[in-house]
Image (cartoon, rainbow, N blue to C red; front, top):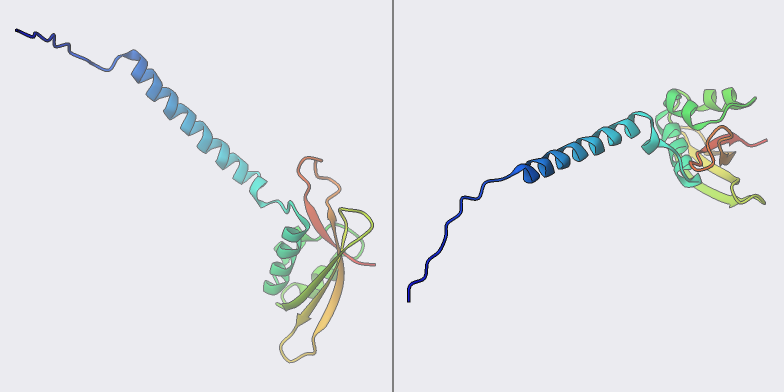
Length: 145
C-alpha cells in the first residue's frame, strides 16, 4: 500500500500580519494611556483618609513644604499649619483617628517627637476635597478648629 502526502508551502498570510499589527497597536495604546494617567496624577491621589494621613505624616517627617502644601487644604489656618512643619522634620509617634458624625470626615490627633523637646500633639481634620469630582474622592488635611 502506497501512501502519498501532498506538501503544501505554508506562509504567513495577511491575517497573521494584521493580527500582529493590531497587538502592537493595542500595546502601544495601553502604554500611552498609562503614561498619560501617571502624568495627570491619577495614581497619586489620596483616595482614602488613610492615604491622606500617610501623605501628611510623611511630609511632616521630612519637613517638605511642597508635600505639605499638596496635603493641606486651602483655608484660613493653612499657612500656620504649613509653617509649623516646613523645614522642621518631626517624627510622628502616634496617631488616633475618630470618625465624625459624617461618614467622610475624620478627626485625627497626631503626636510628635522633636529631638531635645517634649513631645507634642496636634488635631487635624481629614475630609474629601471640595473641588474633586464625585467619582474620584480625594481626601485632604485641614487644621482642626
